[in-house]
Length: 331
Image 1 (cartoon, helix red, strand yellow):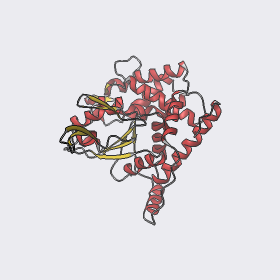
Image 2 (cartoon, one colour):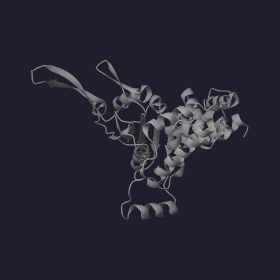
Image 3 (cartoon, one colour):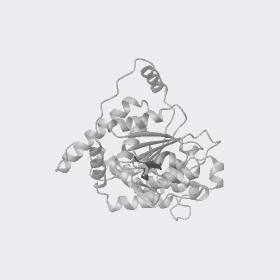
Image 4 (tube, helix red, strand yellow):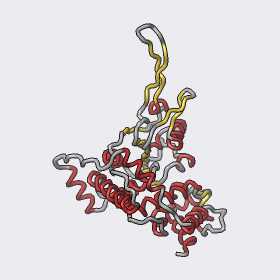
């Protein structure tokens, strides 16, 4: 994709590329159009994504399709209780050459790729989870006092199983906050399930052709950040984030009752970035309240920390985010 000087041409080029990207992923990952759209928005916003769903919904297939569509290096890391940081970061190896000279060299691990699938991340120990934190936030790792750049683009897609609680280590709030959005994958409908069964039990289909290159994705991410946001929309996003905190005067009753900690400023950043991406995909040069409303739940739901009453009530974070949105938007 060539960079266009005219803003309208650049937007149209982006929309065409994004449509191709969604189509490519949709051909492989069937029956989850909303999740596919959120994936595209998250990637174009340059973020990391947390995928939650029961086994068998095709989370690995989804992430592999994302990497294939953009011709990006893909690595899958199975997180288990015995996984060590060196297993995916890499380690220093002692080498001896023909002259007998001994030196260390660094053997890169699977983390050095463009798209990482951290499968069942909540099964790894906190030590291993924290080792991934620097990579997600800084785009680098530190080995023997030396920082190594992971390159761009770099996206972590982490999966976790909501029903498998024994033998798991819940992600700490600091790590959850590094994910731009949490995408909840629901079981397919009857019609979608019939299509999945029909198309995946016959002759193997050829993989769809890639629709983007690495340089294209980097350009698209830069273009998303160039989308202007009015002071009114920035204020609305800020009020929404504040309304999720129980100590705020804006907080609705159920937030005050059930929430211990609300969303962080990073949640507001994620909300605005994905809203910018959504605006561009719809051919607009500005963010609207509809963008914020559509993306409030995916970008904030994993940042809500319940108190005891909230945990016992079984209430979903999305309900509280909707309460907060209705307060700040006058809905």
